[in-house]
Amino acid sequence: RQHTMSLAEHAQRVVAEFDFDQNAVQKSVDEFLREMDEGLQNEGTELSQIPTYVTAVPNGTEKGLYMAVDLGGTNFRVCSVNLHGNSTFTLTQSKTPIPHDLMVAKTSKELFSFLAKQIEAFLKEHHEDHYFSHIKRRNTGETQDQEIFSLGFTFSFPVNQVGINKGMLMRWTKGFDIHDTVGKDVCALLQKEIDALHLPVKVAALVNDTVGTLMARSYTSPGKSHALLGAIFGTGTNGAYVEKLSKVTKLVSSTAKAGTYDDSTGEMIINTEWGSFDNKLRTLPNTPYDTTLDKDSNNPGIQMFEKRISGMYLGELFRLAVVSLIHDPNTPFTSSETGPTGSESKTTTRIPATSPVFKQWGIDTSFLSLCASDTSASLNLIRESLASDLQIPDVSPEDARALQAIAGAVVRRAARLSAVAIGAIVLNSGRLDEGEQDVDIGVDGSLVEFYPDFEGLVREALRGVKGIGEREKRVRIGIAKDGSGVGAALIALVAAGRA
Ligand code: ADP
Image (cartoon, rainbow, N blue to C red):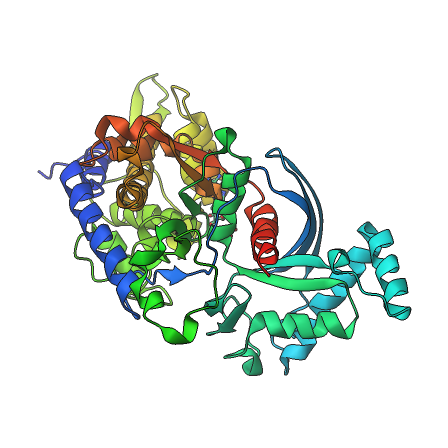
């Protein structure tokens, strides 16, 4: 007679597969520190450690009116940001979908002239006085520098940045494909079209969204302390942090790049591109579900850290784990039915072949947040969502509990991996050893914003890291909203200030 294990018993095994214990966290932190150093010295390393040419972070006293634009995917956003100089700001914004034919246009000019036209429309609508007084003066031959808006350009594609407002596109991603842009300086392309329209705008800075998050947090965080790290936990994951300039030896030794940045602060913000930390899996956990996810992805073998942490992947990891249980003939989903005699009998739930649970990417990471937020005894939220979103009806409370445990294990591991990056960067800074100051971190992205107590899970792992321990309390983590707007404006300010 075959013994049939319950789903709960099998779930326990899967939960254990997602363990990433304190010892493993520590090994990974050590590896992260090693890769950080390696990336500061050499090109082509796992952590890219890209110099951003931003050499100062704000303290909340910055003032003035700046512009920011964001080209990231489906929308182009234009905004103006009024920094009040007291850690607060007001932001005016417009958002336009990018026509598909421009994403795959024949020439860069078609896309970039469209972007410049959006900036023109924004100025006419929201800064009419400014716009027209500039036009009038220009016609009378007067020019006044203070009338020129400094603009921060958030451009979320891989660029080889060689100056604060200079960077060559390496390749398009996310559905864009315009041949002649590759290898060109995207700031110059935008400036050319802005100038063709005679707009009072100077592209002052090229910005990565993680750097924007760091700047935004540093400006708005209480206590005027300089933030250390800006981190994204959204579709992808990445972080940018403040590094000692003297440690960025690959930059200092490059004569071609010398003199293109202000080195008076002795610091520079580094974009780690940590999504590709430990691609060789020296220390990262690797379940059968991780292996399948990677094999079936469009970039196998790369972004291995990101594939265990970010919103794009966690729902899929959970799905793969659940499918492995469904396909195991010994683990039937059970549902409770009350028989005609009043006795309870268990039957196997049939899951239709059309259920999203059988489709790649069929389960969104927001489902994992829903699982964590269901505190009801009978897990009604989860069971309703299983029925309506995943076509799995009549799941018993005990099976829903088993699925909840698996979902929790996937995210718990992700949070502990996030703590590896955060912990290593905190340790590398030495700031916990300097007095009693808090170490400030700005974060953004749906996972950290909406998953119940993601931060608590990160902290639990941080406490176990050698050199952090109880001092985890001095690590302050705060959501930095509007990073791409305020952050880019702040970088434009820094850039304009030294121009
Ligand atoms: P982006 O990173 O693209 O700027 P977001 O920060 O909103 O945008 O991240 C989107 C990602 O977050 C998607 O992968 C999505 O699956 C995931 N996500 C959306 N809502 C939630 C939620 N409530 N809980 C956890 N993850 C979520």
